[in-house]
Length: 570
Image 1 (cartoon, rainbow, N blue to C red):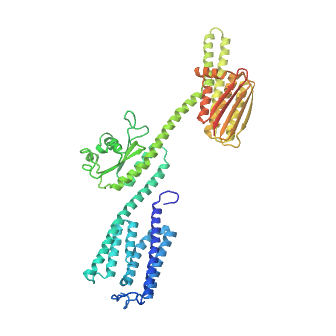
Image 2 (cartoon, one colour; image 1 turned 135 degrees about the vertical axis):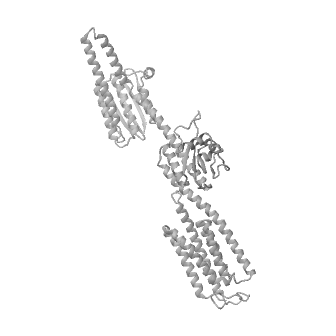
Image 3 (tube, rainbow, N blue to C red; image 1 turned 30 degrees about the vertical axis):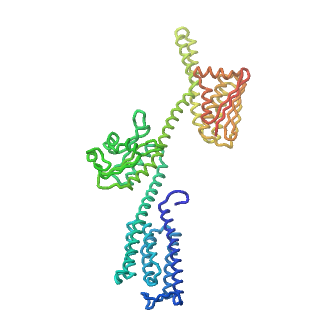
């Protein structure tokens, strides 16, 4: 496994080869020690009370020569150390190394037994290591080839064709033992290789899903990858019915090029019906749709499919949908295909569910943004329109009685409309001005204060201390709108001569403070009256502060001025 925790099939195989290289080194060391011990013990009185009745196939006497010991140790040491170095320092050529090892190792083992077979030392254990290593490396098919090479080699070295039946029995027993090892380790290795390959595919698929943000993209990618991985003609997705009225879940949609397939597995389909698969919560596979996991009679022929597999997408017990893969040709789908589809579906399900949640939150945010705009277009713009309406009604009455006063009214309407238009343009320009850069935020606040001073005929002091802080864009916009609304209140209601705007940061908060020396008011009573009349100024300020994980305070009394403070989290 990679040290960063990400599964890698190549790294997993490399780790297995390194373990085998260490075992090979250990076997070589044991072989060298046994050979040296046997060589030094030859000819020592009392070493062996039994007369030697066999002779070395390479010597005329039953003596292991020193040069044979040296050659064997040198060959096996060179081979084992070379394999260890290759897998340790040259992992990129591991496949070539494995192929060379599979051929070279059986030759070395054959030479070892041909040289030392008469000694009775059980060096045939190398055959066990060889068969097991090939089985774990390639799976059971090639382990049979390794077994065949071992059988031929061992039979030739043991001289089975020349020996009596009694001598053949032990050899056949050892061959049978090798056969069992080959089959057992081969099957285990085959499953591990398939599982590792599936994990590698799932790991890659998971990385691909990380770059997708919408439910549509996730479903489309799931379908495409299912088609590629299983090599099927058709793959399609059906969502679960999660609506209260039995409709498909919000944001989910059926995906597939064959409308007949979608309709069949949505409405009928027997055990393959999307709701039935989700109810059972287990994948299905069949290569005989009239017998095993059958479709309703005649459906398979009508749809033109022969092989079918399906996997449910479920997140914490909540059904999302089912992904299907189907073939109309003679391309069988086995359990490995079903398990792979299930793994892919399991990875896609939470990503799809998160994408749906994000889309719902985005829709909710859009609705909230509409409410925010409604709050922004309250008192000032509504008052402007109301004033225009009032003056138009007066002009309508005066148009026939007093033309001079009518002209004055029209001029007044023009002034009001001009001022309202300027306010709208200013408001929009200030919104565009907002951004994550602190100096732009400061400039927006200063412009807002200057505009309020001109409109209200008062003196406004501005003190901003946020030079060392980056204010998030969302917080900056909320802060600007709060300051703008509070200054509008000062201009329209306070009759103040002086006001001050203080903006500063303290720890993780942005503090906005607006103070005036106006007439003041009874806070609780006025807020209740304004809210009842539909004037949402202070309510909107408080809501914006809460949206930024903050709070809003206002203190005032008649004749004592007003102080409003908003705290926003940054």
